[in-house]
Amino acid sequence: MALQRSALAALVVFGCSSPVVPGEFDYDNDGFVTSRDCDDMNSAIFPGADEFCDGVDSDCDGVIDNDPVDGLIAFVDADGDGVGVAETLQRVCELDAGLSQTTGDCNDNDATIFPGSPEICDLIDNDCDGKADLNRVPTDYATIEQAMDALPTNSEICLQSSLTEA
Image (cartoon, rainbow, N blue to C red; front, top):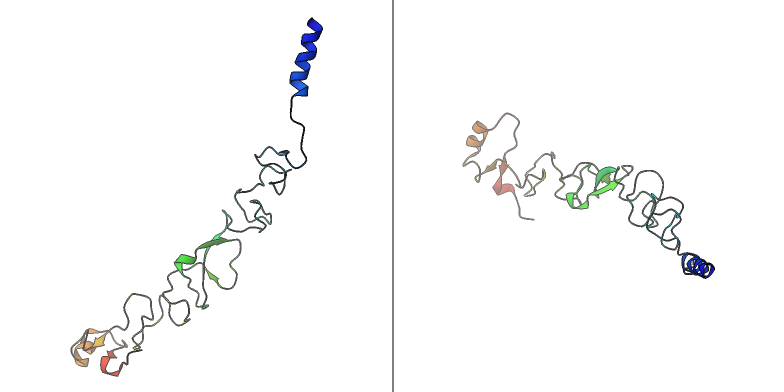
């Protein structure tokens, strides 16, 4: 009887375990079986893992180093003026053409419009400060003389009568 119990115990321990199905084993113990893990011999590489700037597709999405946690913060700069748009934030390993680490462009289709650009009399917000044309006569100053008295030397004065609507 003791021999029968031992044989039964051996069946329970060894005979009832599921056989290893090819593609359904987790060799690196990262929680993903071989059929879902793009490198089942490295526990740091699995679907959803953090990407790093290391030349490896750590998150198994088929793209190397995309949105790396140790990357540079960059913004798309479509017009090449050196200033990108905040809504296009991304992380990259290298700052390629068409990207900028500076944001705040209010018109990324025109390289002459960006924060710090000189404001000119054209009814456009050239410097992205939320106001088109400064030092306007008669809107900001009643007369050219008042504007000249109030403004520093070499300031631009916009005569509204010379402006045309776009």
